[in-house]
Length: 332
View (cartoon, rainbow, N blue to C red):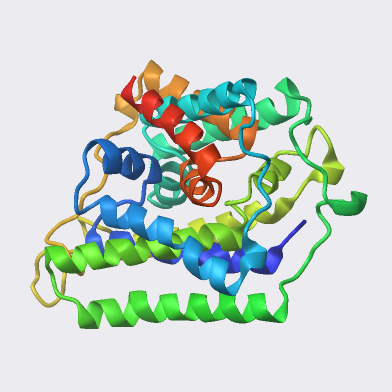
C-alpha cells in the first residue's frame, strides 16, 4: 500500500545517515562495497557501518514490529535453494562490476551529480523494470490485501508515528548537534559515527519500505498490473536524494574554503575526503553489464544489498543461501 508518511520520514533518515557519513567521515555510503569489504577486507571503515545496519533490527523489533516485512518463505527445497543462491550471485556480481547499488549510485551518486552514477542508475532501474514487467509479466509482483489497489494510501498508527517522528528528530540532533560538538577528529570518533550512520540507515530502510521486497516490486508494477503499483518509493527521490543534493552543493567537498583556517573545508571527524574518483571515462563493458545484471536481480526479487542484510537477520535460512551467492559473485 502507498505509505506517504512512513516513506517520507524514512527517506529523511536515509538522507541524514548518508549525508552524515559524508560530512563527518568524508566517505560515501555504498552498501555493496561496504558489505563485501566487511567480509573480505574488514576495517574500521566498513565493519562498524554493517554492525549498525544489522543492529537496526533491534529497535524495530522492540518498538514497532508492525514495520517488519512479511517475507516470502525461505528456501525449503533444492530448487528454491538454487534459485535464491543464483539471485544472490547475480546481485553480488552485478554490484561488484557495476561499482555500486541503489545506495552508492542512486542515493549518494545522484546527489553528488555524478554522471557515472546517473548512467548506472538508469541502467539498473530500466533493467529491473523490464525484468519485473516484461520478462516475468508481473507474475512476481504480489497483490495487496483484499484486492485493494496498492496505490491506496495508508497512514501510520499513533505508536508508529510517535516512534518514527521521535527517531527522525533524535537523528537530526545527533548528526547536526551532538556529533560536531561532542566528538573530535580521531579513529574512534569515526568508528562511533560509522556505527550510528549504519543504524540510522537500517531504520530508514524499514520506515521507507525498502526492506520489504513486495513493496519494491510493486513500485515496478506500473506496466504489468497498474492496480499493484505502489508509488511510495518515489518519495525517496524527494526527501532522500533532494536534501542530499542540497547538502552536497552547500558543502562542496574538496572545494569549499574554511573561513577559519583559510584552507579547504574538511570533514568533521576526518582529515580529508574519500570520494570516488572514477569518471565517465572509466566506464567499460563490465560496468554496463554489471549494472544491468544488478537490475535483473533487483527486478527478480526486489532486494538490493542493504535490505538483503536486514532480511538475512530476520530470515537466517534465506540469508545464508543468499549471502553465500552474493559473496561468490563478488569474488568473480
